[in-house]
Image 1 (cartoon, rainbow, N blue to C red):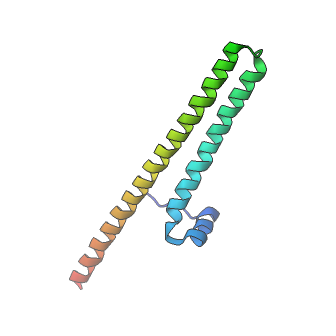
Image 2: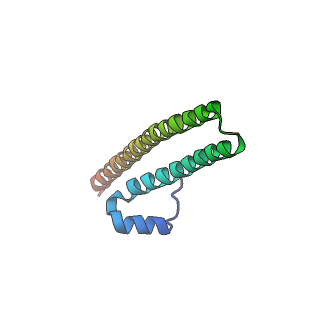
Image 3: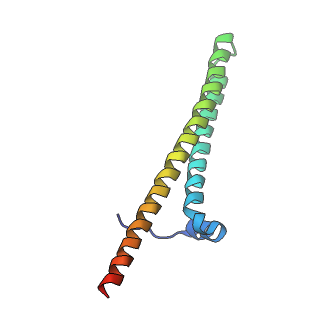
Length: 110
């Protein structure tokens, strides 16, 4: 897979976090994505509250949206960040392992 070009976020995260920049960037992207999803759920909840008269049934549905939406977002965020970090660590270890093997092989040929 071709490497992507560095952008301003790479430089910013690299300057602040150093070697941990890929981890910080992954968490940053996941967090902003989940904030956007939470905002969409909030907008849907707000629209439902404005479209329908406030009855007990509508209030119950809005309570369900609030409760389960929050729980799903929180659980999804934790799972998504965990999987991304595991994959990032695994890829980093794999790349370092392959790099060390190439260096050792290069020394043998000299």
